[in-house]
Amino acid sequence: MSHTFNLEEYLSNGVENIIKGALKASLSNPKESLFISKYMLASNNASKLRKDFEAQGEHIPPFLIASITSYCNLYCKGCYARANNSCSDHNTDSLLSSSEWDKIFMEAEKLGISFILLAGGEPLLRNDVIEVASHYKNIIFPIFTNGTLINDIYIKHFDKYRNLIPVISIEGNQQYTDSRRGNGVYEKLIKVMDDLKERKILYGASITVTKVNLNEVTDQTFLTELSKRGCKVVFYIEYVPVNKDTKELAPTDTEREELANRLHKLRTSNQDMVFISFPGDEKSSGGCLAAGRGFFHINAHGGAEPCPFSPYSDTNLRDTSLREALHSPLFQRLCNQNILMKEHDGGCTLFEQEEVVKSLLD
Image (cartoon, rainbow, N blue to C red; front, top):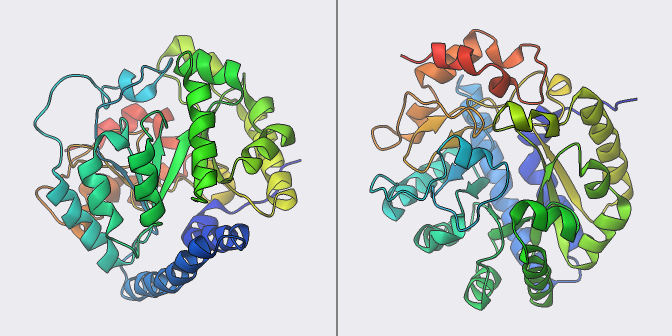
């Protein structure tokens, strides 16, 4: 039996929910608690800003996803980003500069967006952008990283700038992780986790959920081990197939139902951890949250996309403001034509309706 969980409401209040959970989880860490207490005030102010915009008829999403690079140092099996060429080894001069990202972060803060997820490629390859992000203390930046580049320099930086929260990709136990990400990766991640815990740095884990590892990654034993190593936030990302050959790995409605039930239990029994699922139960949330409804994605070249799994854009942040990008023709059509609310077979509405999305481009 599935449990009602309104994802849109959760995300709209997501910053507050996550921070409250993190505050409770960090009571034994004065440095972390002090930062979070200050951030909660900034978060409340940001929420008021968004409500003011809403009262004026303009919707501002609570968070953004920003892919700050298209490069990565790993070659994970079944990587969606490499399959759709949003992650590549080819040299390019078209990546947004650190100053361009600075402008985006500055505008986001003024709009009341206080939660920006940094992704890639591998975001830690862009230490220039990480440096820029660190100075926006009213914004929390979860950094979705494969973890292999976290060294003592980065750990000192995370310790100094508590608004940067590393979110380390792990697939479960050593067998699952190394089989997808490469031999020896699991051991590196365990060392990184232990180093972060030793410095009492808040961090999370990002887990790609497939049919194969669903039971492992939602098992209390696995999560207890993560908790003991200091992990406080867990993101479950449903696997998106790169082609027909990998579609069998993607969770079906049955697995999704099981994941939702397990999440309900985990949120109840693990009060010292925060659990977030993407795309989660879209039906209970009233539809997909992409295209500015709950968030949108900025790719490494500045394109405003509905979400990372729908990499199509008709607007570039180099040519327009963040506020104007929220009103892109593509986003407006997706919302006005109720594309985000349509029934679909998979977990991701827009991924399942790829041809429809492409047909809406100018």
